[in-house]
Image (cartoon, rainbow, N blue to C red; front, side, top):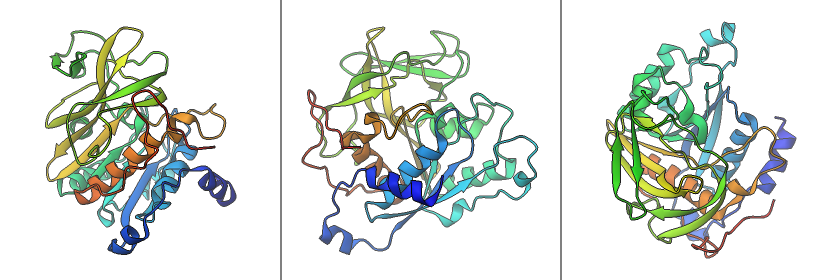
Length: 304
């Protein structure tokens, strides 16, 4: 993506409105690294969107590390992102359609050490589809897009009671048609502090039977899968060593989407990403909840 197209995209991305006093109080930007390179989604557009969203707050400086996207590319020998130079890693890569594409083991170990030693990891949307072969990645994300035998699933009822479904029982992960969904808060957390207990977001994927180790995991919110009238996690956090990990099924940007879709122009989604990124990096979430945050019955979408 050219610099010109990135600038155009930046003008379309939400500007939530940075309070001057809050900006002045910030002690330097949070250092974020967005990792991309291969995905069945629109990777370049996703990266540009996330970079703009974070940097337009004035609170983050976001660099990008793009891996090779073909097995056997000589560039793999030199691709070594310096995770330790950052406060936050935003992982967007997804090899679900190319399972032979894997990061070098040295890079895997570097990410493990980064999070274990206190770094923050934001697993953006389909990045939880990635790397089923990598045991520590499964531990970091807690739940992902996996086969029926590849871990525990967590299902809820309408009141938020959680049932653990063992490997081999139930189904593999899926999502069905995208849908407007009411996000139900399950666990109070710095990320959702000050948000309504229920808010409406457009056209998202509700994962059924997301699976994984599901250890040291806290479900933040859940939603109803309309087609099956069942309830599933929408976003969750995992404690991994001294670090923090955030995952959700929000944030779908597909290769055939025109422009920036409403699902990622949702004020609720964008506020959540910013607060999650801040919490992952610092342990606190101070970005303000805007007055036009969605309600249980009303969407709030920024213009394209």
